[in-house]
Length: 123
Image 1 (spheres, rainbow, N blue to C red):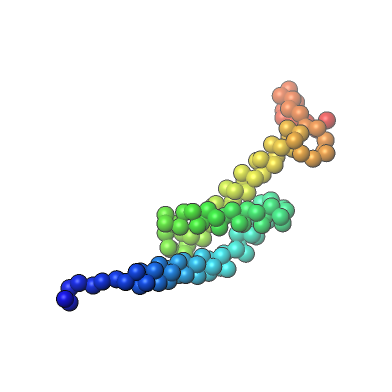
Image 2: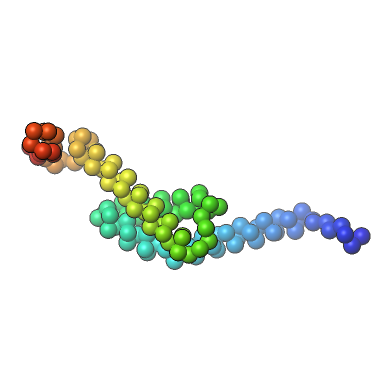
């Protein structure tokens, strides 16, 4: 029976383990290659090491979630990582700005909106 190829359950399981190991190795390589770049961009946009680390972690979680849709081209991947990092930083900055403006966080001066004076005014 040359045409019939049987796969033993152990062979299938070992193939799945090899594929998972390959994915783990690829992911580890991507993190090692791009984590410094992502961290640097996050820090330049947030000015806080702790927040930059959180954003960097979030970028790589998004990479894992979208791995099937991302092209394998290195320039595309790098551009994707930069765009996601910048967008997450913007989202973070908007939320922290909103918290400060609305008085949910911090002990800074009260900020109010006075349309007649052309914008935000510190009290």
